[in-house]
Image (cartoon, rainbow, N blue to C red; front, side, top):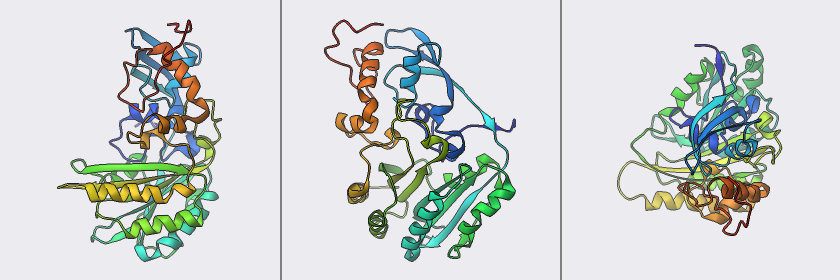
Length: 336
């Protein structure tokens, strides 16, 4: 309505609060940064019942921690976001038959390595409308459309694709296109991580996982973190996984019965990628994997987050999350 927007994930039913507190990947991150990079201020109810503001001038330590540190420090009751001019985008998907998966991944690697900030492109293995598996590349170009047509032209020519649904659309139109592949009411289990680059070995593992997929509803999803999102320093916010890299997610989905085989597929697929991944992780993609994995996700920021947790929630009231445990022996440093 107002021609303004900010980065808001990849599907429409993602809650913006949890997205923001965990970092916030999405279609506009190359141009505008992660969702957490676009928060100007928070209002938070702390564990001791106080309502506080956190921004660059008020409680700046808490402001730092809420930008990626999850729900560890209180209940956020209000967010103030920086919005950006956002008109019509160039977006949509091209799809290729699964036998081309290896060449599609190789092309995607080159495309995303050279992409301008305005272009964010995802790659996904999913099932087409005819019930056959396909590998698709989805694009969002948020700059001048005439420039975008030239930038995206190689994506549309490669193959050529079975389907080309890239076109000018409102930003929300991209979500409407993808929501149908992840409807409410199914069972889902996801396991993901990140890797510095899409190496040949990683491509081999992804192709093998696609060939072993156990459900027509399951997906393998890749998205690069680049541009503005990657240029923020690792210690500038609690979210530490900066620098250019590729996020991946094995999403198992099924609509009835036990899901053991589908969960096992996701876990085995994740394990096959471990030789190529970074220790860092996107906390919004983490299932319950324990303290060690949370520590890895936050890397050099973890100890600072522990100190912040000890200050604002020393009794770990807020623990139903990717939990950062308070220091059990904080001495005299438990200031409120």
